[in-house]
Image (spheres, rainbow, N blue to C red):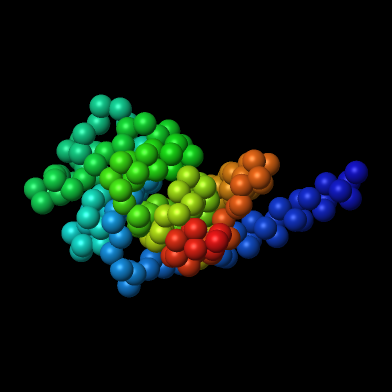
Length: 207
């Protein structure tokens, strides 16, 4: 029994270090513009990066998923220490239904379908990107998804192990990733093969 537990722990640790090592290190700024830019709420720097990408023409519309009910763009930006730029008012859409990453994917899929879009640039924290890609590719298997990670100052990408909080955060995120992957396998869905992600359409690898 102890050998089995030890083996599972060793496998978990090996997978954890692989997970951290393979998480994205840079954003693909050279990729062509997408139909939409999608920002997942829940961390610093994401909304600011989404607005920057919108201004640079990396997408026609910015969709912010997981906004608290009743919160508008002005209030959302004020919480990030900014005011809503006039040029962004016409091109930012807020989603208020999602409460977790699975909900983000489902909410975004409904909006993407209503707009007839075929590509998106996904903005979230680097450590959250693997699970986000898994959920988004499950929800939109034919969508071209370009991952665009942000790198919060509070979690150093290279020296995360020096922070107890950072270690706990990454361990929790890896465990959630495994649970999501396990759910996909139990439901006999084809899990993400494109992570580490190539930026191609999910469906291109499933034909």
